[in-house]
Length: 164
Image (cartoon, rainbow, N blue to C red; front, side):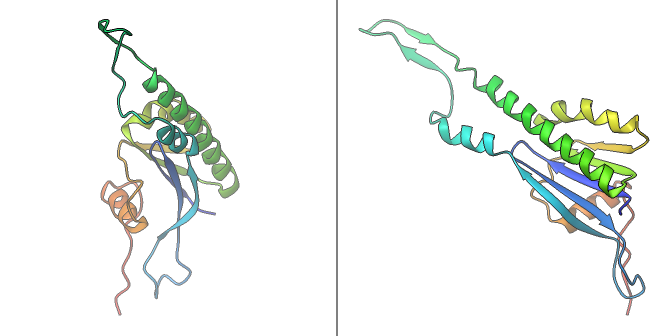
């Protein structure tokens, strides 16, 4: 059981952490972040491999005709893949909140994922769970760096150092 669930998300992956107290606080530094699970958005990775041209653009008409523009709706397709991934992330958050009896959820999301995650995370707030939203992509940060950043923002307790 942990009071905090920390979730960091970008369009390709999500990482879930708990902030857990140490067993012997007089001998160990704590609390510490423990990785609960990770999710990968395989659809985005597959789509990126499938698309060979890096940008949509222009095509030439046959037999020397004029040049015309076209749009392959790539942005709309990527948004749909992000939306589907956000649903999976939110389902995982709800599962962890229920099984771990979490009191506070901290969600740090990249700018593109915010619009898919933020509106739906509010349902947890109506259930009595404190929800903190950060607009920061911390997916590649080490757990210690994430903890330090959140403590600096006063969202989680500072890690107490043991002096020998």
